[in-house]
Image 1 (cartoon, rainbow over the protein chains, first blue to last red):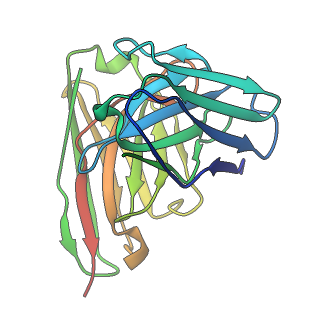
Image 2: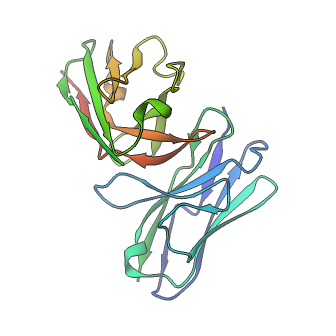
Amino acid sequence: DIQMTQSPASLSASLGETVTIECLASEDIYSNLAWYQQKPGKSPQLLIYDASSLQDGVPSRFSGSESGTQYSLEINSLQSEDAATYFCQQHHDYPTFGGGTKLELK
Amino acid sequence: VQLVESGGGLVQPGKSLKLSCSASGFTFSSYGMHWIRQAPGKGLDWVAYISSSSGTVYADAVKGRFTISRDNAKNTLYLQLNSLKSEDTAIYYCARSGAPTYYFDYWGQGVMVTVSS
């Protein structure tokens, strides 16, 4: 199985700031990487797929990038509604997820 | 797109349960579908996939115990859970597959399965 190591496990940021969440794949996943947002008591929602393609309806302050086997989710101009847990997931092989990053707003 | 799961509940170890996922708002028969689970307070684990042509794939943790199936006439996805273990306790989500690879573009609200004596 392809392992996805996500960091940090948690972070705290202020409104308007920019944050970055990272995922390291245990092998080459050829840009087959998705990001999800999950709010408490809700199901996950797709933000980005294919490493950098924005899902319809997702605000443009969310963006994805890659460097080798390292993938990043950047959230610009943090809004209160961005408080959530974020998961990465590789979709190159049978799906595996990162452990999640809990984002809190100060 | 709407996905609505049902059939969860409390079940004893070793027993069986069948989950359903009713789909609407898209051409169900044209899409692969997945089940994903999340243990309480934990991360996400993919469980099973069924293609539009009913080919199936399972995670090692459930292979031989769970069966995914679909009824395109009823726009419904199923997951038969047999020989349940305490570690199968989780919220089970159905999700539509983003083509052509395995990401999940729409999710249901989830259904809780608790395995306990």
